[in-house]
Amino acid sequence: MSNAKLPVHVGIIMDGNGRWAKKRGLPRKLGHREGGKVFRKIVEACIDLDLQYVTFYALSTENTSRPKEEVEALVKLFDEYLDDIREMSDKNTRLRFIGGLEFFPKTTCKKMQDAETATASNTGMTCCLALNYGGRSEIIRAVSQIISEHATGISPTWELSEENFANYLYTRGMPNVDLVIRTGGERRISNFLLWQAAYAEYYFTDVLWPDFGKENLATALGDYAERNRRFGGL
Ligand code: FPP
Image 1 (cartoon, rainbow, N blue to C red):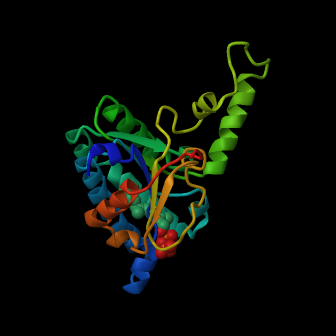
Image 2 (image 1 turned 90 degrees about the horizontal axis):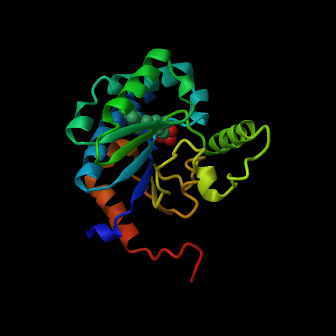
């Protein structure tokens, strides 16, 4: 595929871990563990394909209300992953974390900050993890920051434009999303990158996340390359 037809920013909703585990009579947390392995493989595939930005929806604000055991297993999985991010630097990849990160234990937050700092000067792909993320709460947070920064009145040099507003989102500095891929058969966006994906193309597949492979990713990108994006124009 020519790079001209590659999306610049891909968002991935990794759904179906629980059903994958259930089909095998395993606890849900083992489905997430398998999903974690696939996440690593797909990050590698994205790097090999020359993608520039990929945001993975790893935990939504809504997911945090699941049973304690499942949420703790997910937090442990993310924490363990942060102990072994050598491949990111080896592959010149930046790591970035978005969402209500204060939800995580202080030690995990510190690992996230360290990982961002350690990979900040890499020049390859940006791999962004959305954790305890919700699109609506991100927008509310941006609005309240703007209100508090301008409590004494909007400075004459600042204007509320789409571009300026986007600077208050977690994704500050990242381009809009071109393609959202959702695995697991559901056809909804589940509060993912609401602002950023306003003009994204959507690709839904029934494949459960732990079964998702490089070939499925290539199929999704091929499908995207065929689309005619008009951004509301003719
Ligand atoms: C949704 O599937 C998936 C999640 C809530 C967790 C996603 C997390 C991973 C894939 C692990 C990523 C790992 C790292 C290290 C970033 P579900 O549990 O809702 O599945 P179901 O719809 O079949 O129940």
